[in-house]
Image 1: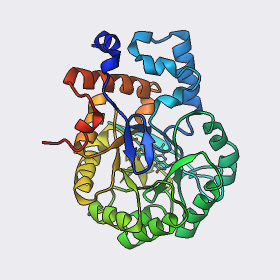
Image 2: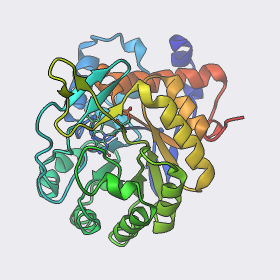
Image 3: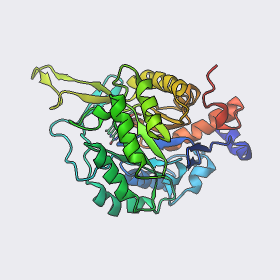
Image 4: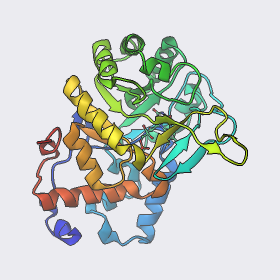
Length: 337
Ligand SMILES: Cc1cc2nc3c(=O)[nH]c(=O)nc-3n(C[C@H](O)[C@H](O)[C@H](O)COP(=O)(O)O)c2cc1C
């Protein structure tokens, strides 16, 4: 299959997509918080390709061509959440594995927007890849202030508002569970920028389409979904919750059916392009999300299981399209029969 693709390189499917004004050369980005700013992954991908530790033939020529800028094989990088001031994150246990997923209670630890601009963002500026900056806050004016600071930089290609994280105490998920608040925070951020504004939705609501419509009314250019599903784990010997805050966010294969259904429903409720995520691990998972109505997809927890997941997925997606006779990725988007 792979050699078939290599020999018919010119007939590779057209993979470019757009999310509002954000142009992506393929539909793959990474899920915020599972890739940091990509430095470690870039290093690993570069070294792996250089050493030939993985058979080169496993990867398509385009990937090998990225050499010194390996992140440029992505449609976009999505950063870890950035807040106005440094956030220390949550005390105690921060991650625990489940039968088919991961629970996390990181608490959006980050060094704050100022340190982000002079650190990760500066580095990303040299990586020749669109950058979606994920933004967190306790209140609408905090989200606005973060974006206002980022507007002074040329590197951000788009913003993703995290109004959906289950493991911080105020702000975040409380915005994402109330349509009025979701619309308000979107509108306030809309006023701060003309760059593409993506709002990230939580599945921890009764009707996700209600929140999606509110964000559309507030001026969002695109929606991303889903954030993690609220859950918990119990230490049976200690007879106490594993996580200090009790609640944690479930991600990984366990949530894929929930995420797919959310994408399917939201795509029928709004006219905005969607970034689908939740448990994506294979090229066929990507295709499922596209068929459900996503224009782009994000790979999250799978990056922890396989740090080379993205290069593999991209190659597999190309092979899948080739073998299925798909010449343009748009044939798949919303293509559910
Ligand atoms: C360790 C970890 C940290 C995360 N941090 C963030 C974050 O900072 N901002 C955000 O919007 N989502 C965050 N998420 C949620 C992911 O971006 C994604 O929505 C979720 O994990 C579902 O995708 P997955 O199953 O492919 O991981 C985080 C997820 C994990 C596992």
